[in-house]
Image 1 (cartoon, helix red, strand yellow):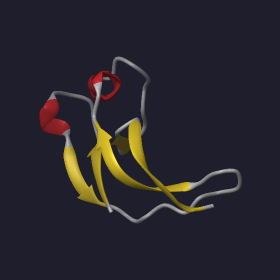
Image 2 (cartoon, rainbow, N blue to C red; image 1 turned 30 degrees about the vertical axis):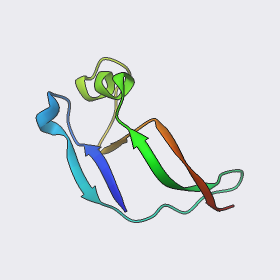
Image 3 (cartoon, one colour; image 1 turned 30 degrees about the horizontal axis):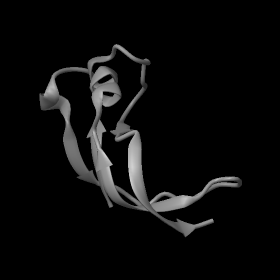
Image 4 (spheres, one colour; image 1 turned 90 degrees about the vertical axis):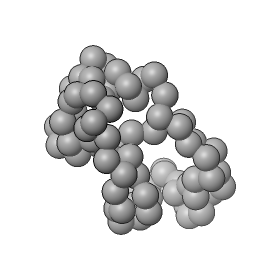
Length: 71
């Protein structure tokens, strides 16, 4: 699947579109087949390191619309 990923803080230059493995849902989780998503202001703050500190690669896109694919 495609994902917008950051590996370090910075300007929009740190955004990477990557192919990653489809995640497997754990107990009490669902897997959503995303039809639409966005990178919004909260993601911009995350990318700049102003919201919460992240360690390692992080997938951006806090909002999504789609259908449940797996329970």
